[in-house]
Amino acid sequence: MKVPVTLQTSLVGGLGGLLGALLSERLMGSAGGETALQAMLSTAAWTALVMLPLTLLLVAAENVLGLRGRWWRDLGRVWLPALLLGALSGALAQLFYGLALNMSDVSPRLVRGLGWGLMGAGVGLVLGLADRSWKKAGRGLLGGVVGGTVGGLVFDNFAGLTLGADDTGALARLVGLTVLGAAIGFTLQLSQELFKSAWLLGTTTGPYEGKQYVLGKDTVTVGRSDGQDISLYHDRDVPLKAGQLVRRGNAWAWEGETVEINGQRVSQGLVRGGDRLRLGNNEFIFQEKGQVQGKAAQELSERLLLHGDTQVIALPVPLSRVTLGSHGPQAVQGPGVLPRHAELQVQNGELILRALGPTSVNEEPVTTGQRKAVRAGDLLQFGGVSLALLRAKD
Image (cartoon, rainbow, N blue to C red; front, side):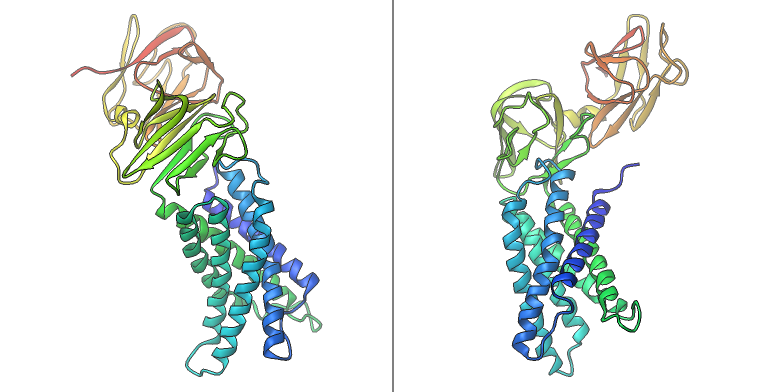
């Protein structure tokens, strides 16, 4: 069972918060000072040390869980902004906290929560700017504020945790910052998911399966090199710079090297929700919110048949999942067909074939357990039986 990306990011955020707590405890101890200025400077340094590993781990996680490329991408660019924004958020939080102490109608706990929200906003900004996307930075700022504030409000609940009489609050800070990091990681990813409008999702079994890249700016470059927004470095058949997805008005288009869009080779062309793009040896589905689905997705709403020399098998309508084999309502008759030979399932707006026995698509073998996108017109072979996937005529 695949773990949702939001949960994975939350776990990474929790680890980042824990490492930040350990680093700050090692170098600073408990933040604070005898004067207001000393307290502000100490808190600024302490918060910067907390934010640094949290930001670095979340950037690395975004690289690994998405299509941005190698895990270390942009780490060298974000460490300094992370330190500076961490210090700034800590200084502002301490300033506001000092003012709140002199105001009887303001809750110090709420002010501390908002202070951690400032740090969360800084993390979100850094992640967005690392991708050179102001839209992503804005979504990250919102998610970071919410996660940081919620985590900061919960932080005080751990104040009573102690390792003994000599504990100056280190255990409470370790637990509290771990929860804070998890909350920031969760809401950062959640905000990107909620407010995304267009994205590219990998469907071919392999390193890009299930990974997505949210299109957060009007021009998104694609290629094998690390300098592209979408870096497909695993696939040697992808050019260093394959092309770009460009937004013009309300429409997206592909421009660049010749690629397959829904099986047709083009160097320029519109892409719509549900369209399939083949880059090198991998297929991706382009998805949009609130848009009419493209050709590849429209095929799924039509009646489909598996047509052979001696048999015709009607697939169920609507089609969600069907098992093909020598037994069952969609029985495939012929030599070499297993009782459960393959599955067809609708995933993310397209039809996916999963091989459970000897299978090929358009004479290309599909390894047992492997998934492959199929469409009307493809030739499927199960054992010794060949069947064409066709649209049913009215």
